[in-house]
Amino acid sequence: MSDPQETLFSFPCSFPIKAMGLANRGLESAVIEIVRRHAPGFDETAVSLRPSRGGKWISVTVTIEAHGKPQLDAIYRELTAHELVIWAL
Image (tube, rainbow, N blue to C red):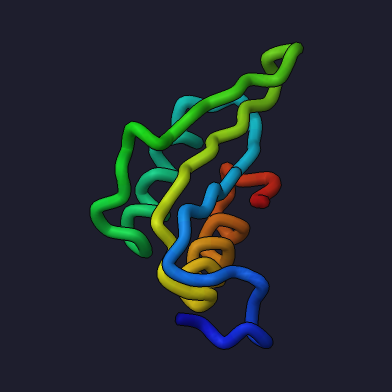
């Protein structure tokens, strides 16, 4: 159980992570690779892709079983540092 003052979430919990970037086949694999490092064994069927209406952008959403704020912070740090990721939510 996490400290309630540290976060509003109660861990472990199901947590969606979304990364967006230019429509590029490498974005999906980069996001999966990063998430896999921090959440080994996550269900790869829990990955969804959504292209923008014009097709220029794509979002990759991965739902993981999050075990704490440090894990989520590490994922977001690595995602936002990656050259293919424009936004991470």
